[in-house]
Image (cartoon, rainbow over all chains, first blue to last red; front, side):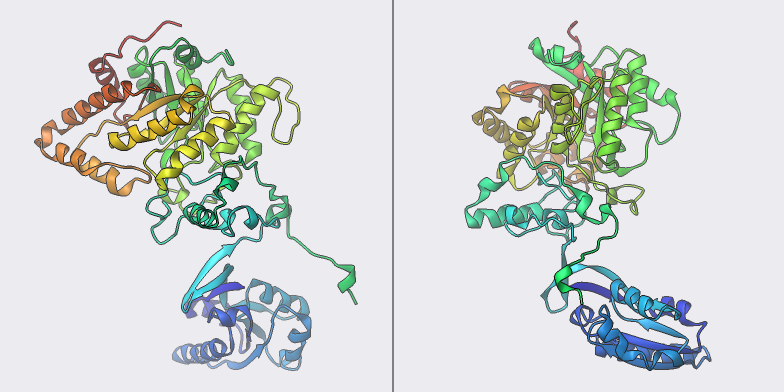
Length: 222
Length: 307
């Protein structure tokens, strides 16, 4: 899923203060799982924004809505009746949600309430871990299902570097050394031999380095 | 001989090689490089020029290499993959060779979080081992990455680093092997303070036959003070400074600590030179280059071979 965090109210205020009516739109998918932009967070943000504005003597009209998915037109259209009566939309979707709203509601300012962070997993309640960079050529099969592109701070394909200490990364002790994880896992699986081969330079053309990516499938088109 | 490198000649002839490190200045003054170069002239077989070490912006390694080369030094161009993609790295290899540089040390580099540009993008298009293979392929096959021909390929003597003190411990020699198989001709190690661990690492390297295939230069960094020892022990990535070394530095009065640090460095050189498979030493006197000649002289290494 996509993991995000809510921006501070001050930054949100700087973006929305010029509007007198704001539609606050959540997304009940990924960003609900990471407790940043679901139903509950949409309600909380709308309330916090009202309070913050009132403290400064402002009283914009704030309406809430939450979509099942903010990145799919069928769902986005469900707020079509609310859009015309608001000057701007404050989105609690990820970056994809914000831009999808902007594509559908082309004449409306769409503002992000979240900082979109990464593709990751809920490791445990309250902890989300980045584990996929979407490089476009999954290599997990060779590395014991631990991604060197994502979990190594230097994206090493022939790691670990000399900064691995006690299972921690040199960048900061809160980061587990991805290469220690790869080695541990392959050792458990009895497949350490996978690491003896030289891994050639990565083809980054399938990653964002090749420009914004797009998938087109004829069998899925209407 | 694979290259025109003086370092290769020294090692091929079986001499105990001596290299030292020279950090370029945080600015554009060539006289800083010249001053450091002068201190080391005649004392060493080659000089490593660091590439924005600790991710801190400094004069380009290639420029400082050219300055040292003009003074009569044999430069070793350090190249990290942190700041440049494969286009820039390969282009710089062509340029370095055109300037007369014949040695390159391939590194991944300290993460940018350690330096003074913490917000920089970390490139890491290649890793150090892939860079080793790239430089080797330029020399052996006359090709760039992807197989394209080079009109006049650079023929570099290829180096890589090894850190026997990082984790996972059992993996360090495996990684050394990967560097050797990728094409490393020489290895410069992390600074050695934990002799037992280094000696174990060398035993593993010998058992795998690696010391027959690559020249290993042992890393030596003289400690200036007990403060530096503690800093290296706790703050520097991939460093192993055991308690007894810190205690030894702490056991002498402050004014004598620099002398003690130099004494430890000299003893370390003597100890590593007795390890089978050690082909030389690499002295990294961080902003302390003026002490390199006395360290080498005390270790009996002040006479450099004519090759």
